[in-house]
Image (cartoon, rainbow, N blue to C red; front, side, top):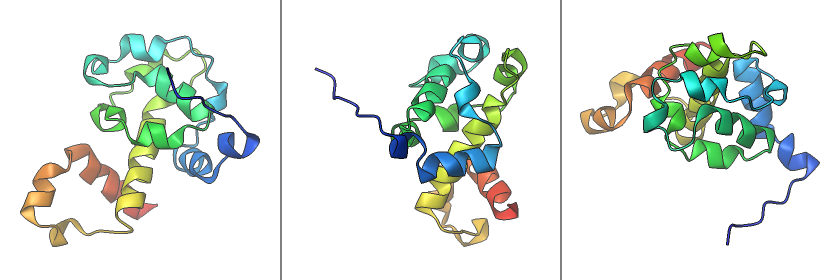
Length: 137
């Protein structure tokens, strides 16, 4: 049996949701779950949760669940999802916001040149790119 999810105003509008909104500038509550983003994503077959479900989880305040998936790292940031969105939401920016939040939790700040080569090889390339963007914010 699936675990019960209790929704509260505090959970839905929690600090992590605010950070993702601040980074991405996207109101995830504007998404009405049409599924166009998932249907057009060239990497959806490799994701554990498709983009429209990421948006739904964020709407429900399930930010930790989103951050524990592979989906933000698999996102190609190709903007196919954003182009096909009938609400003109930039889902690729939301994915970047998720990547940034993951990096902020794991590393307060890190310089790529101070990472050992083993760690550099483990991190997905998009994580390194997101880190550079994070440091510019």
